[in-house]
Length: 121
Image (tube, rainbow, N blue to C red; front, side, top):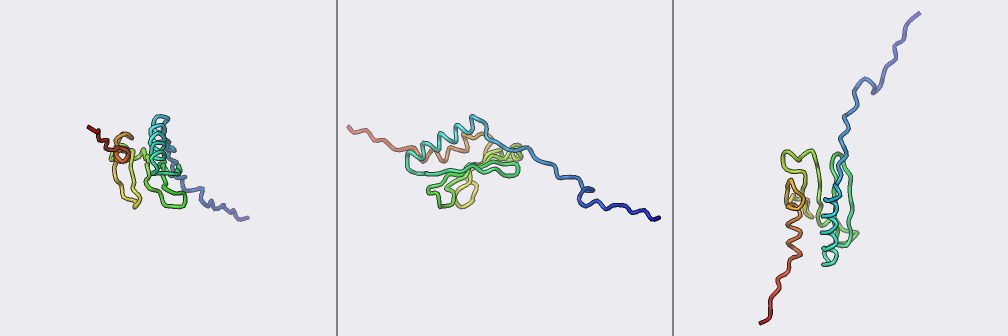
């Protein structure tokens, strides 16, 4: 009698290690949504989306729902030691700012909200 050994398809290779899911903390989400509300009130943004990726999370803001994102705020904890966990990506896909703290990454967007006020004498 012959012995037949079964062939294990896919079981011989170890599974790829799963990464911890990335998320915004409550304080980070508060800062992002506060900025979003101010930009909506100023008429710059109208819609947003939150994307979950492999080890990263992103917040995209849109001028119109049918358009490409005006900007993206991405948190990728894997890059925290090298470049900082946060990135601000512009409409063309160019990284505008990187940093370890969210507030410093949001500064270029907040400067759009500053208006010059001239006092009448």
